[in-house]
Length: 501
Image (cartoon, rainbow, N blue to C red; front, side, top):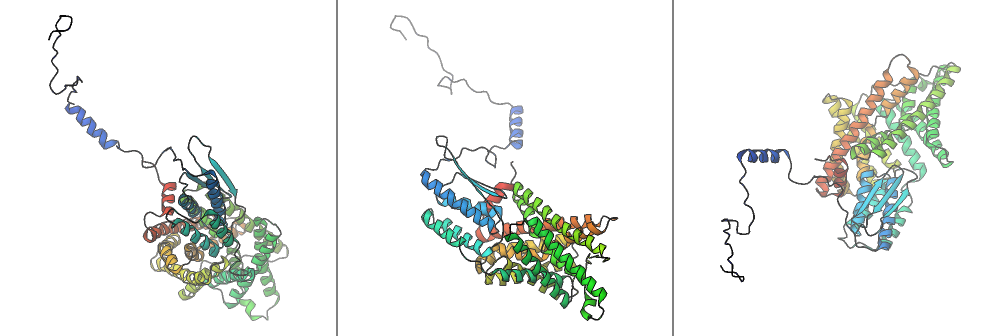
């Protein structure tokens, strides 16, 4: 070709198959292909299964709406913790409410004494973080079921829930509801729990009656001192002093009076064990292990320390009575034997009595009490089947029994309209390691040569862990069956305990 200046342009021949002028890639050799295939086998191609530092979304909601929802969730979370909900259930409920009101970038942090909600609003607006202190813990399962019903109504609204002010009024109405039973009825229920423990240990009718009266007296005194502002630790000391003092009084009366026929059948170990088992925070042992399995380690650590402190109060009360008894010449040796009631039917009835009495003490509705009675008996039947007939150890039998009950609890609770936690708690109460902890305490304060107290405490720890594992796995599986794999509580548990790939 001839250019404008009269010269000639060079004609450059482009390589075939590369008309855009890009250099042609060389075909990888055999060794390169082998290394690539080996790398693909060892290294994953996708991102991590657990998101790491993912940019949070910006929820386009007004600041007033955000603050109103966070305030409602803080009040709801405190109410659920105070009435006996677990940390995982409370976290799932708060996230469900926030999502229903359009707040998807909310972070929930719950410790043993506080609830914190933080709303991330992007990089151009300041986050909103509010904390609320939880001042006390208790159990009120009828009120807790009402709170769960409110959460379910909000979550089932399909993105258009009722105005937040209306739900706040409903929350206040639930919190202002009177208890299901008077305090005297709850004290009587604690007395029935003491009687149930005495029945389970093979005590006679008089022992059952004395144990029930002693346990009710301890609960009455503890409530009175608690209303005066006395710490729970000192309440434990006073309760253990009363229980051991009753045993000393029975021994003194039996030694100085030979004409009362029923005193010859008195077994002080049953009286003390039945009274002190309700003082030992057996449910706290299980709850601490439950929080550990769910991934809430800070709360689990606080609960564990609380268990140690309350157990120390029992030890202090027993030591005080032992020292006074020895000064007056009374030998108080109140370590119970390992034997239970000879009749298995009596054991099952005792388990049913313990489950029903605990339901009343936790302010369950009458229908939930009936379900708890059946659950308590069934849990002990399962335990006896695997422990006696199956030949398994006590921790293994306890874990299997609570696992089976946990699997059925969500379905039973949904169909009978009772709190699921009441069903699982009723199955745990008859199997609590309170007796093992009590025996460890008594071995520690009376046996200075052998180390039997170590074995007793170790057995209590294993039983508590087995109960927690059984309830956790059973409830998780039951929720998957009852509510499906998209259950928000299941997602929360998976997120808190899963491992990164």
